[in-house]
Length: 490
Image 1 (cartoon, one colour):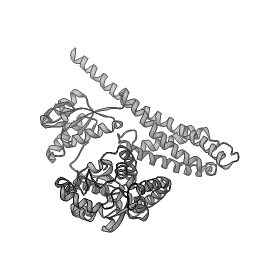
Image 2 (spheres, helix red, strand yellow):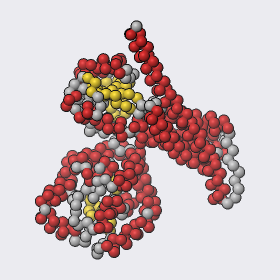
Image 3 (cartoon, one colour):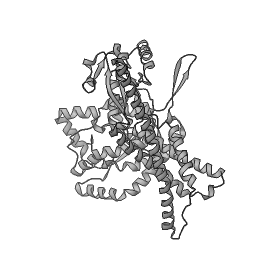
Image 4 (spheres, helix red, strand yellow):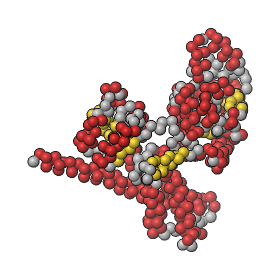
């Protein structure tokens, strides 16, 4: 009797879990449809209003076929959204946004091709397509973000997971899931033989050791397991996989590949030889990618300089009145292929800064050690009052836009270094030489001056080896948040 009741409860739990899973997916489809539908109407009405406002004459409304609005365009979007696995994969927000960007671009191209073949290409407004692309991108991102927040509060979007292992790798995963709640993974427990020695078990329950895996999976009824034991031998790893895989729907393995550039990896399987092959692409070795990066840098920095010209003038006047000396300070830095260039900044120090630094380091042992270690001082006595503000807000680096326009720097890249720092990079200096140093970079969105030197070097190398155009966009967006937060700036 008790066993039958338990089986009935288990079946009820499984049915409810499946109901939540399919309900979440269905809700996302509905949300995406509403986002697309509203984008079509926004594009139509905005096109009519803009044409009539700017042209000064009456333009007839853009007449859209009902079947085209309600059926064809939404189906195009939903097809590409499903094709890019946005209904099945749990992705960080920035990767999701990148895929949505591509979906909106693909659909607009497809609309042009479709209307061409049915002989209606001339009747489709190009302004309408541009507005549709912009509106659909914004709406799909915004609607998804809000809907996931709502579903998380209702308990629909979360997937319970078990993590096998509780070491450093598991900590990284846990931090990722905590910082990216939209991914929807809820850690219900850890499986670890040495749970007493692991910090992560203070935050999540330790359910048992490796010998208890089958029992724990059966009791928790979890269907998603992450195997985070990169230190295990090949034999141990294979045994764990064979024990877990038949009992769950999804098994994710975190291999021991830390330090290897993985952002541009493709995977092939040779089934006859039971072998997995990883292909690593060096995107910056391709000329078209370097040209794309340079065109984006030049265009964005030129437009940015024009837009912020009044701010540049105000800052220049404040520096001029605050202390004697030049407004712009240039310091020789190492650029692409080891070429030296003058890196521009608004002057934030007193005019005789070098003499003052020499005297200060001679008198302060701790400051000398800090300078030798980081080539920076957290409490630098040479910084002026206006200079301290400029540094805290990173406004002192705005003149580097002229370096970008000249091609000496990039908007995003490794941190510009001086010649004395080359030896600290060791073999990684070859990665540094591949690209122009950046006004911002991976180091800046990861703590800036609070990051120790070895980590900075690793971040510069990681950026170069994992470069993508979308990654540059993400870093620029995150830089805005970091600058306003003022963390690690001095």
